[in-house]
Length: 477
Ligand SMILES: *Cc1c(COP(=O)(O)O)cnc(C)c1O
Image (cartoon, rainbow, N blue to C red; front, side, top):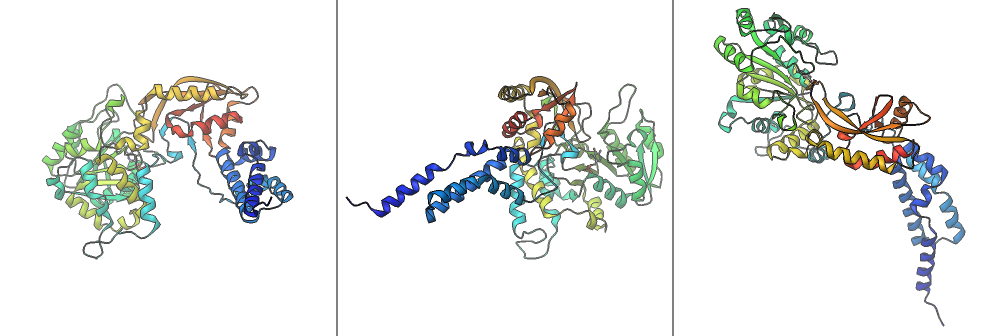
């Protein structure tokens, strides 16, 4: 009987393939376990698959004799280690935010939507029409990419568009500085003593005013300022009324300040522009998720402020940037300020901002990670916590599910809390601080907090597809 040589080679290859270990078998090797500690489960599995694919390709091409195959199998952990060590050792790394603080400034504030990421990659991979008019073939301005979209999202009627303009800068701090520098310029700015605040990161309104060249004219007291106080302070020297949103603190009790509408009326009567540092960039009210009283950009525009500044990466849920929305004449002056050249944003920011605003316009703002995190029902988070706690039964750690409260953070809505749930973790041999440190050493690092001597992981700020990664991290504690 003759055997077809092709069939024999095929049979030989099949035998060799069968002798390859599975990914799970390789994962048990002690060297591989060490690599998982250092690089994380996902990256190790990917590297193992790549090694196995390389061996399969080798068999296909060369059909190595049996002893060469054993050598190659034995070399897998070394190869996996090489692959992992060869990867770039970036300083900036993705982390899992299990603190429950949604806009965590130290962890990068608002995560971007899939659409924003896709648009950003698309625009950045090659050239784009950043300052180029595709119709005329001539030079244009980068501002055009956001202007109409911002106005539409802020519910400005189309027929009023010619009266409004939009400028995008690096952040809200830059927006406020630029507005004051342009409009106040060595004249007086009237502001309530209750609004001479520090926004965070050393950004203090009185100091910013001074640096911008404006002269501060304080009115009222810390807890009470009335419309009449503003009125009495206005002179020939007044350039601007300034309203600052008290975004990162709240005072209770004997407190009074004019409504935005009252200030608008006063400013119009006296012929002085009203500038509001709105800060949070919130577009529409948060009442549906139980957070009342947060001022919105739509309210500011509808009330008739002349100019408003807001942040892009707080409650707007977009990239870091600062928006200035205002009367055409004021925006025109800001555009002429040479400092705008120093504060302007790049194509990546425009791309991410545009895609974020599109979600609002299309009525799909639930696609923004920020909206999703804000509106996830507590029961859903509780279920995920139980799944993680249940899957770590075999581990040494003691896990329980506890009720907690998530915060919005980022210097916004300081007293607002959202009901949430967390996995609480204790260990017979490690303190909570040691556990936190171990969790930070995984890839991606897991960032939690401590409450009552236990590590607490609030899943409100964790994307559900990361639950499994957290469960595995807990098993390795
Ligand atoms: C957050 C905030 C700022 C600063 O915004 P950035 O975008 O972080 O620069 C300014 N003003 C108010 C009222 C704020 O809440």
